[in-house]
Image 1: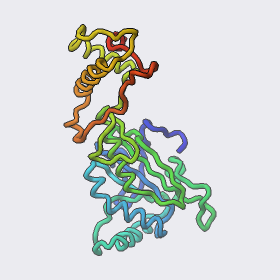
Image 2: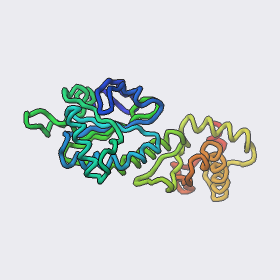
Image 3: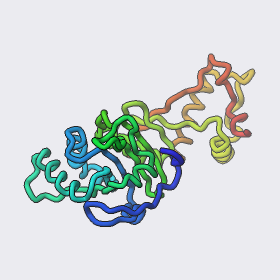
Image 4: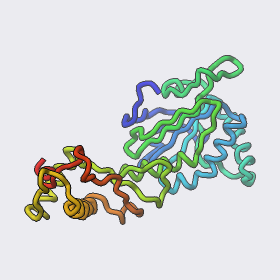
Length: 273
């Protein structure tokens, strides 16, 4: 995906889709978005992928995520193929397909967004579209990109999980661990040695506990001091992260060790940083 990095504003392209012509930013509105490409219509793997995406469309909608797909086939092909996808999903005849598909039969958008797989070609020797996933935030900036080869189908449950993490961490100072699922504990992202943390904690220290603790001898964290520090730090976390607003438990990812010189520091030295 040349020239497009995480945090960049996603291109506001215009395209023909199965639901009419769109301008991408207008299509998104104030919602999150997911744009995903597939190599070709009527192919078995692509059918399973869009079938799964269609089944999960209500889940994405519940998260205020607008879905849109892309391939290098024509609108006519797309319209015919969506009927096959709905049949694959055992949907009733006449049901509307839940999201638009972009017709990029000139490969212009695929080239611009770096979507082509040079190792997989069509009958004319032209490269097929790879299986790309772009997640775009409400600010129209790229939040995540995945690039699968044409030969490997994607896990849309994992993409849904990633969206949950992206939306959670966009609003709260937390980080989600490996294999995290909604309702599981969340490690608090500690900014203990950053300028931001030092400035925030200094303000909290001065207004709440200035002078109430004395530094341990030789700047070592004793057991008593650790206990007090953990209690105070928990109160500080409550002041910057609300478990109620997150709707799930918090889990600190690290506690300073009294036996580790590299982690030893005094409360007042941190507060005065």
